[in-house]
Image (cartoon, rainbow, N blue to C red; front, side):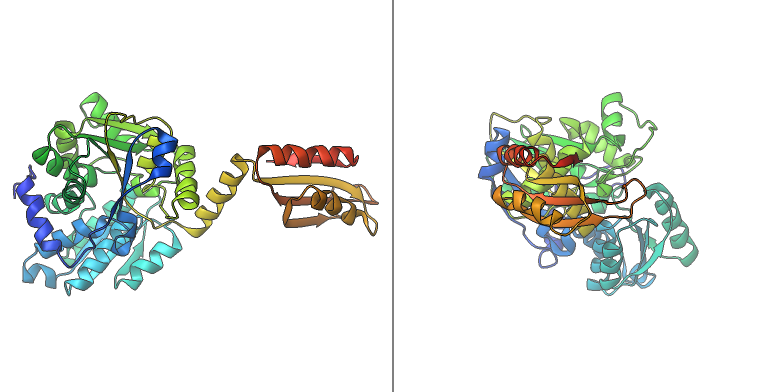
Amino acid sequence: MSEQDVTLKDVEAAAEVLKGAVRLTSLDRSRVLSELSGMDLLLKMENTQRTGSFKLRGAYNKIHSLSDSERQRGVVAASAGNHAQGVAHAATLLDTKSTIVMPEGASPAKVDATKGYGARVILHGKIFDETLEMAKKVAEKEGSIFVHPFDDPKVIAGQGTVGLEMLDSAPELETIVVPVGGGGLISGIAVAVKAIKPKVKVIGVQSQAFPGMYMAFKTARIVPFKAEETIADGIAVKQPGKLDYKLVRKLVDDVVLVSDEDIAEAIFVMLERIKTVAEPAGAAGVGACLAGVVRAPAGPCGIVVSGGNIDMYTLDQIVAKGLEREHRLLRVKVTLSDKPGALKDILDVVALSRANVVKVEHDRVGKDIPIGRAEVTLTLETQNMEHTKSLISALSNARLKYKLVN
């Protein structure tokens, strides 16, 4: 395979290599998401793939392509999580030792999972680019083979098998929406899809905080930018791969940006309404469609849910904020007399309003609380906006001194 090109033949060869090593994940039509977006949406559930993301495909294809002597030297990779787990598991399956360099702020759950797949883990760097440079140094020092997370033709070909499966499951697809970080997944999918059905639109979705591929696509050159914080660490890549960029410019129809807020809302909706867990990067495509950033009204649209490895603390925040956004979780701070029975008076109002108490925080010694008074913060479950308004009205009618807490 040329270092400057990836073809349908390469993707098809990767599909043969991957048989038995990866799951054939489902492509499911979502009635709920279709109704909410006004489009006919089908989800490619790579969040249910082994290791929890599509990354196993490219990693396995790359390591499988190595010679016996190369495999004996071991492999090294850099990743915030998903590529780490993919390389670690692929290396173990192929009897190769692996070393993974992860950012210092990587999720402890992802670090533990990577170790669990058999890898040695080194923590280095605050952003991915620093982690990547360290991984290259480790590979050079130890004589190991570096497995790039996206800028490698074998990796790209492996990721492209997602596109093959999507068209095989639903040849009627007219649009495919793909999360974009460095570009390995979307470039591989575009290679396969455009060769088989050129009229299918391939649209990339990137985080507003890390718009490297978006800016390169729009300006026809890779340009530096100031990165911001994002919950979508799986696509937080400072610079797209050179080969990926070349393929994206040649084959992809558009690249759009999505906000963290839209990603979080997509995760919340998917969790509650379709009973599936997506990580922030994996939900980027759904977020873009629900927010109207991507429009595909003419025919079926396939969205790649690229991963499901979400940190539980992040998920907890997303659920809480989602409930608040829908007026189903309310925090009220009430000042009352510090005497027996005072708290019961408040709880009686809440009970009569048919709200559910989730949490009670009682403070009588805070520096801003007068002597003889206490402050109670209630976290309450409500049904909807109307129920919330009714509860607030009941608190006012009871002559309680309160304020709402964001």
